[in-house]
Image (cartoon, rainbow, N blue to C red; front, side, top):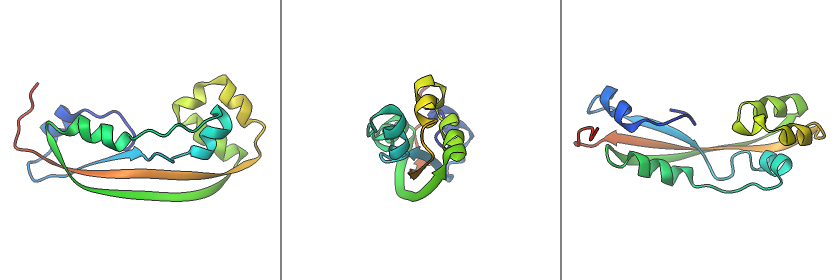
Length: 123
């Protein structure tokens, strides 16, 4: 699962006992520059911690990795990136973005690698 809805019982149901579940979540600094430019602030949220908590009944967090890069994006690329997020639906965000010609943006993710526990689906 990559920055999508997470359904631990369903993942557990379809995953073999020896399988791995890899959940990719946005890191605290993901798109911080874009969020600051269009929203005025770049709030930091620990999505890795809340994801680990969500999966703890059926999975055990075995490993964690970070993936991070910084890119210069031009106006059309920024518009595409904004459209791919929930922020893109906000008129004010699009309005502010229209005034930006380009921006260095951080793309940052945390990869959480889980193994199934011996517990069965409580549902």
